[in-house]
Amino acid sequence: MPKDRIANHIRRLRFEHGEMTQQDLANKVGCTRQTIIVLEKERYVPSLSLAFRIARVFGHAIEDVFEFVEEH
Image (tube, rainbow, N blue to C red; front, side, top):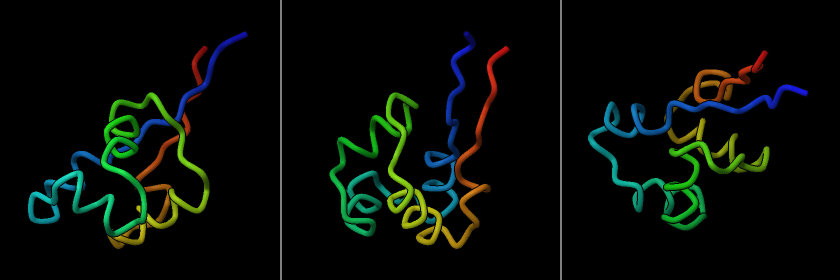
């Protein structure tokens, strides 16, 4: 069975928003820097509430930050 994944654009968006650090983003969304690190490496899928908080920090819809990728 293929394993789907959730891709994200967090790293690019951080740099587009004044080179925001991982710690800055973590502080804004209420998580740890380590969580941001594993999210950017796509080793962790965020909770729905965390995904919405991240999207709101960047002023984007959740679908602009996170992307469902079907692996065939």
